[in-house]
Image (cartoon, rainbow, N blue to C red):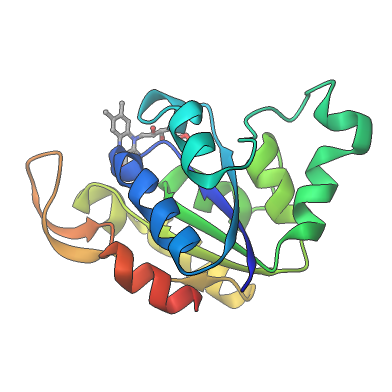
Length: 173
Ligand SMILES: Cc1cc2nc3c(=O)[nH]c(=O)nc-3n(C[C@H](O)[C@H](O)[C@H](O)COP(=O)(O)O)c2cc1C
């Protein structure tokens, strides 16, 4: 049973993450959620805190958390970091070593395995910069769970769906 830091970013598929937390907890994992500002537009920290039974982290510059250097604690406690859904933005930042919020800083600071489950509009996914960034992440040793094909929330059809939550959990196991 692992300690999983679950990074949630600002994609519409973030609405599925309460169920993802439930599945991970059911498998016996300890889950600590880190949310970007974008993610908070789609799902509430209170929901994730209730389901994970752990405090949810949203701020890098948090006076209480950073009394104990919270971002390094999160980076060190993780057996695995899972970013789901992963936006084009977070992958671009990590591919380029940018650490400008709590999640990207934790990813930069951790020695744990980091897995991204990207989800986005098919044109965003096929965008050359996104594809280059995904390639860079793989070269840097990050794991990518490819998005599934099908109907997308934006009304398009194609690659870009968050894979089934059970598939994400199997990859993490
Ligand atoms: C309604 C809405 C849905 C969005 N869905 C996605 C998405 O599925 N994938 C994605 O990469 N970006 C999506 N975005 C854009 C991101 O929210 C935006 O790039 C943001 O800067 C991401 O920030 P974050 O990576 O720090 O969470 C969406 C934006 C809006 C307004």
